[in-house]
Length: 485
Image (tube, rainbow, N blue to C red):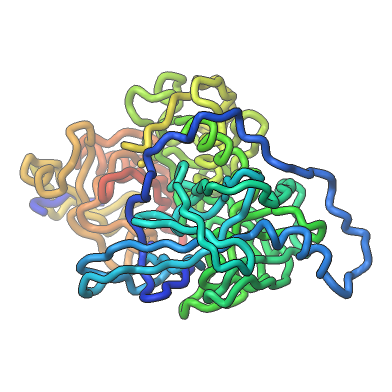
């Protein structure tokens, strides 16, 4: 190193007039009506995997079909429509935008009756931003006005209420019992054709394709298409094990990869929305990144979430967690990656104590963290040109953080380090991902305050690998530069 001067599955829903995304939901902030705590119909008996292959699933479908309804929504859209990239099977989409005249947007999704007196589950994106929501049951032409009791955008769940009685509530199963290879059926209203059923298997569990902030999807090859969003994924006993949510597709049609939200996660959110009008989630207070293969090799840990920043005045900071720690377990749950850490923590109760296992400097330890309530309103240049270019970061030029550079890079005052002014495109550092205007704040867990310290440390650190902590685009992250390659 030398010092130098200067310086993102297409999630679809069927649109009857046009397809589009969503913003804020009708009645989204309304509290649930006064009522006794929600009582759901459940059956958590084990799945019978020893039964012979069935010739027909007619009895299974009949058991649940009356619980699956159609959800219609309308809203005014102004100035733009979405060109989908990730599609939701209800008409909503996420992607780049183009100009369009104001129109009334019609969306169609599915829903699941969960109580006899009219509570219905669906996806948040089915009703998000809607001016009007209606529900149709079975083959009847009658449409009920639906009130959005509560929405959870993080997990893509919404609860509706219609004025009806003697409905047929679905039986909710236990998604924790699912295994890859289990047969499942998807029931919904694809393309607005009317209730349809498709059959497949559980292709994978715990998927996180990057559609929602909280993800623990069941992946299935049961056909899911536009209009299926909010519909039921059921097991071979007719119990709901998931809420069909999205498909991975470049065209918007079924491509063999669909995603459903596990019913156990849905159940917890639904009870809170109906009983309290909102969802309470715990908060730890760390920013993390995944352990890629090179990081795992250097840090000698093959699973967990690597802390890139412990936020000030948070449970993590108060408990003593530090930047560079690797969280490997929360209570009895082994943490696979950052997505799994977030999912695990947010399902715990605010104010509760959690035992957090972590790895620091190769040693494993555990501390107790009192979790807080998550708020969703918040996720002079060194003149040494020509110096001998040695050490572990060969081909990298650095400079001090002048006031001008701080302003240019919009750096927080708390960020110290050395700014990268040049990177040899043929160097190991370039291959590892270092680039100009990154700010190096640590080398092998040793703090860097200026360009001179960065050069000195790069000379002293024994290679060929070095762990680099840097600041880029408003957040910290770690990279491993391996000069043996």
